[in-house]
Image (cartoon, rainbow, N blue to C red):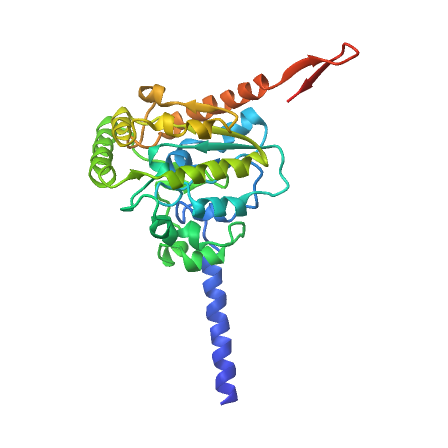
Length: 318
């Protein structure tokens, strides 16, 4: 009997080691989220939905701002503003940071809910998804995520098949897909239909989510400067958003006052190329990232007040 128990434990140990070895092969091709849970705590962050995840490139920000800015954005379902996203951001933040830069992206969907009561936080969809169920967000390999919330099949970790999505180590979700005009037109038509059919009739403004956006910015202000950005989208998607929330700017006006600035890029909607109308193509994302970074740099310079001290010497202060 003792020999049987020993052999069983040995076999279980081997199986466990093999399983953990398979999990250790997870990388940027595993899924659109995993790598974000494997990096260390961060001093500067990009926040928002999949528009920011695909559209804002940390490498571009580093060129302008001379610091790493990690993209901790997910999707409209996973990371609308609320308790779940805020708690995960707290875990990702390096707590002793005082000079961080935070790009907080916002749009009507991120402050709306698909619940019957838009303030019914108990039934918010993100409560059942990975941000709510991943306690450890800074562990590599992140076995907790892979065991508890990874939605794929484990055999795919062995196959190492390269798809159109690649999640870079800086959190940017890179999409490599055909951009011929007919393919783009089909994807835009499908996305517009999806938003009109499955989103617009069911989403409603949530004052609770707006409150959590405010709380999120308040948290980040303790660690640095916060810049609010509304990213560009295809004009057809923008029309749907206007129907959902025609007074969007008024609703976020109080939030804007506690940030270091608000940049609305929807005035440039027609100037960029989109994968599907909702997400910027990576070349356009590079341009948008550069514009946002340049705007932040110029905003930072404009904050410096030049005054004279008692001796007539010039001093700069924020």
